[in-house]
Every structure is written in C-alpha cells, then in structure tokens.
Image 1 (cartoon, rainbow, N blue to C red):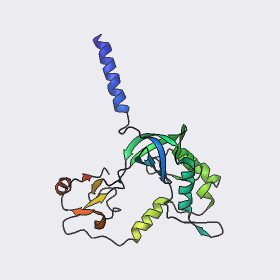
Image 2: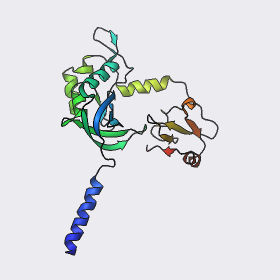
Image 3: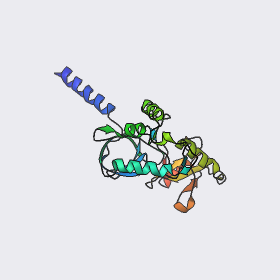
Image 4: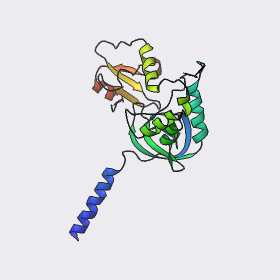
Length: 223
C-alpha cells in the first residue's frame, strides 16, 4: 500500500512539474495587431511568430509603396476578432504580455498566420513554424508576394534612428512601463536593455540601484 501511495504521489509531482508556468488564458479574441491579441481580457503575444508592425510599409513588384503592416492587422482581425481562443501560456515577454500558443477552432493560430503569409516564423525563439514559412514564401502567399522588411529588422532600424539616451550619472537602471502598466526595470547587460527607451512623461524613470527600484515597486525584467 505504501508503494502504491508513493507511486501516485510521484506521478502527481511529475504532472505538476510538466504543467505550464501560466494557466490559459481562454476566451474571446480582440486583435491588437498581427501577433498580439487580447484573449479573455489578457494581453497575449503569440509564440513563435513575428508579424509586420502596423506602421510598416512594403513595395509591390512595380515599386509602389503600400501600408502592408496595416493590411496584415486587418486580415488577422477578419480571421479572429470575436472568436474563442484556447491558449497555452509559455512565458512572459519584456512588456509583461503572456507569450502563448493559441488555438481557434482546434487550429494553431501561429501555423495559420505563417502559412497564409501574414506572419514570419520567429526563429530566434522557436523553429516550430520554419517549414510553414518556407512553403508560404515559395507560393508567394500574403506578404511574400511583395518586397517587405522583416519586422525585427524594421524595429532595429527604428531604434538606431532614435537619438541616444544618456543616463544620469551613476543611475543606469531603466524603469520601464509595460503595455499594461507593469513596472519593470532593466539592468545594463540584460537582453532588452539597449532597446528600452525611458519616457519620463509616462512615468518611466532611471534608478541608481536595484534596491531603490524594488523599494519603489518595480520588478526586474526576466531577460
């Protein structure tokens, strides 16, 4: 009897360890842009894909510039707005959004969007949609029928074009507000430190020490 009880206990522990860090979310979808949804009121960044930024433009084969980023968001909205999604939360990103793999009608949303040429495989974080992207590119689906800059390259160019920010002497810790208002601080050397901009008009600020940041109610960025 003791052996059976111990086996059941170990099985329960294994099940709990295998469970995702965050539960859900599930619920109706409100499309924010090509790779970001509100699902049941929770802000979700779709895992493994990267869609064009809303302000991005592309060129046709004839060299005509058009607002492809806005078009992508409209296409994704037509597909999913108001539908019910079931998501498996995997992580949180620098903006405190839940990074999740979501399904609508039993189909993986990331796979649908990459296969339709409405998003790229985000290989920095996952190879899950690598083949789907290659097939979309060969078939000239969606954005592959035009000349487009990958969203990561676009974001890097936007950051490079901004004037450099100088930290106050001895106070190099960046206190950043997430899209949902969460207070997060970035340390020099962390993954997103260089790309984080401080907007004091929004309530963002510099800190001189981690103790100061924590005392003010801010938490350290996960990466």
